[in-house]
Length: 343
Image (cartoon, rainbow, N blue to C red; front, top):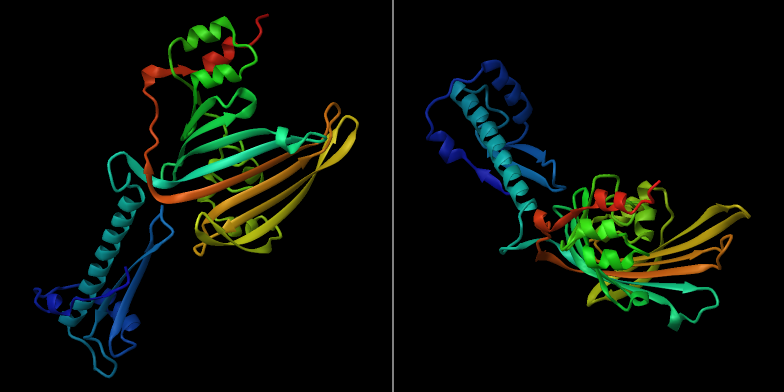
């Protein structure tokens, strides 16, 4: 909010004030530098990057006037107090807006994503590459995600994953299919529950809400909340422009980052080569992320290329990500303990 609010009429109709004279004199000295003196107070809400600005025009203190009456000083103090009140109200409004659940019931502020990961082994035809398709919804205010993954190596069966705060929920059926061999005790704990919750701990790069090159390579669903150019600058990473492109109907500018990372193995040190391309719209919002990482041969495997393309779209109101009912959730800690070999 930056409009000037003319409080002169309201203030002149107010009853006389008796402010502290010394305080009023200090304010007068600072504010009587123009024919129409403007007092501006800018406040930054803790959870918002936007400034909440209130401006009050006070026309009673023009240069050349000799002194001011106590009433005029009172009006000045009242104007500043009114300014502070307006700022506070603006901050509250901003906070309420930033934590809103959306324009309609069951919605939240966020975006959608679709991602395709292709895992290509050296010497293998790209047409035979393992493909993992991911689609989902991200709530940016709560930093919550709800995604579904389908792996071609597992006949495209869906694996559901929700991350809310420090808790990650996996769909029980998909989690069991992904295990090499779930124990009878694990199946007993899960029983007929549809979700397994893993609580606490530090999220890995694939779930982190903080910028890093590792987070981009791991394709965390929260990439859409990152300021990529600022993150690259703070990380002292060289960024090169690669032209323009239209992504899902949106005009974007493309940028490229390269990283060569040494990896030590028992038989020597090799290098992982990574290229990160990203496309930003006119407001700096990421619309597409393309990561190509070529992992070198290891002591017992050939080189592998991981190629991931992720689109971010439908920014605005999206479905609200909700935690499953507690009665429908198995404790991931117990499930993990039940899977460990018994002594």
